[in-house]
Length: 428
Image 1 (cartoon, helix red, strand yellow):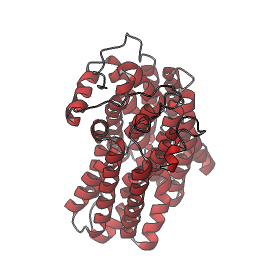
Image 2: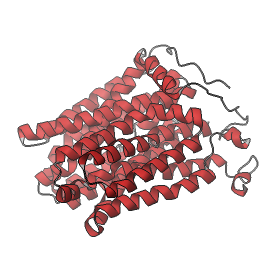
Image 3: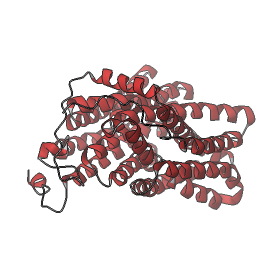
């Protein structure tokens, strides 16, 4: 209680910042757990004789649920509370990852890493950051959302070299157990410090002077999530934001996150060095996405998206040529591209709030983020087809760059028409 009482009105530190710090850790670990199977593919092939196609089913299901659970996760949090929902998600992740150390058959891998871990990680994805930022911050919301978003992307990229080294030195089962213990250790911290809303502590949101009453929601979470989707499908802004985010996923997780290492190997760059490039992108993303949140608080989100997608498109068109400029050319790409990796999230969430109402921003962003994962899955498959048919990733990288330029154009049309009908507000 002392930590809470010190953050009531009149103290220097608003409790919202403690909530943001705890959420940062949850998103960091959750994203690292979701990305773990990518370093276990080769060990599974060696021990069990499973093919890459078989393992790919589990990983694809993992990625799909990571995105599709988002809208339902928001509705569950609204119905059952932030602390209870996050603790449950972390417990699911811990049980799922620990159980994988005992698996011996492909269906067990698909069940555990695909369904269980995919569902748990989807509960603690970017929609959690959007929910926390909206509930606890009236000012500096973009900055906070930028930091929280950066933690999820950084967790996927930075942890991979460490987990890969652990798998080589101690075996893949040690990776599963270490990840499970790290996830389990977060539960007491979340239970002790995380709170649902500022009103639970008698506090206003950061930047406000009046305490906002806690809404009471009795609607079925699935019904609320699907009602949000129905509202979105009738909205031009939803299609524009979902379309740009589809391209965002295709050009990041789906293409670069999946195929950069094989592309580097094609050009004689060792696998460990290529993994280091992804880690470098993760570090740069932490800086770039946090800065994006700061900019979102101050500038037109549409203009920011135009710049982000435009610069990303140019960098992807440059990527095939960077392989001919020695490793330094590729490092330049990694730094530049990493700064823009997922900087699109803060302005996208803000535009969703303007289009559908601030209280519905997290839910609608959940559906927009689902389009991100569909784009990622599509690009991961299509880029592999291009590599198989042509022997090079050149066409995939250039095509993704051109798509990003299209996304920059699409962003200019968001919010051009009068605000469309939104979801019913949450009852107070």
